[in-house]
Image 1 (cartoon, helix red, strand yellow):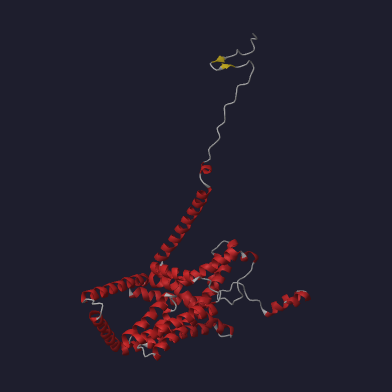
Image 2 (cartoon, helix red, strand yellow; image 1 turned 45 degrees about the horizontal axis):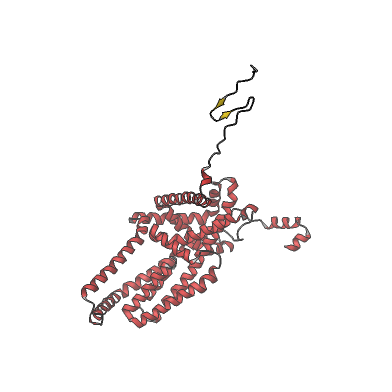
Length: 418
């Protein structure tokens, strides 16, 4: 036996040959946890946590807005009013009217129109309200008697229970809508402060909108400024188109329904027209509420037949608005589906009451256009939105001399293509 060789070892399961290498220990394959999870579940959880982060961000944003409601609501009011005044204001600027004079004329004209409409409505209501109230009570009593003496044999207790249920439902809805208005200002001082702040914001936007927007764009990183600037300008064009179209549609609705009420002999025709005009700025909800009020007045004052004709007038005007005016005037400027309009108005009313319902559609249209503009990637090539004279122009206009110099540098073929 060679002393240099290790002795052979034998065991229970046999002997190892001399000089043979020892077998390697088997390596364990690591178990991957994600390999045991189905791919669909991994995809669902990836989407789920991202949606949770987005929902948390939206929730924090809404919470901040509610905490800063005394600043946010006047800011939105000032922006929306400036969008309403924008066509007239820019028309005067294009015709070389001094900016300060254009601001004064726009504000005075807006205050005169709104104040005149409200004064006319209040004047008509104070004159005809006693007669309308008496006729309303008489109509309710007649309906009560007809239900009790008719074939249905309804008792007085049942009628009182129905009336109490209707009154309770109206009070609950009023509390829901007015909660947003009270959130804006639960005292007269808050309302006045908000009105003054909105007026000051409106003046600043009309006087120096370009400077405000340039300062806002500089808050973002340099690489993101082009996208922010283009998206903001595209969103502003959408808000202006929305405000201009809503103003025209509201005027047509008010004239149509108010004239129909006047021809049918319905009382308070002028206040009905004014309410229709103001309610048109709250899409769908405003039209339904004001139309129902006109039909109700016709029912209690003129009877079922006139109420039926009033209902036909309201439905006809609303169909004209929905199928002719909106597609013809708005076109594809504000790409918000009617279902989305209903949902955002309902959600805005639940969150912030009347202000939420008022600003829901403009905010949805603005967010939609901003998202589409950024996701399209056109801003990477410097492609601007539509060539519209914007209130916050960040690119200075080219002077006629500079345009002639630029044109002279181009080749004859390029000038021909232009």
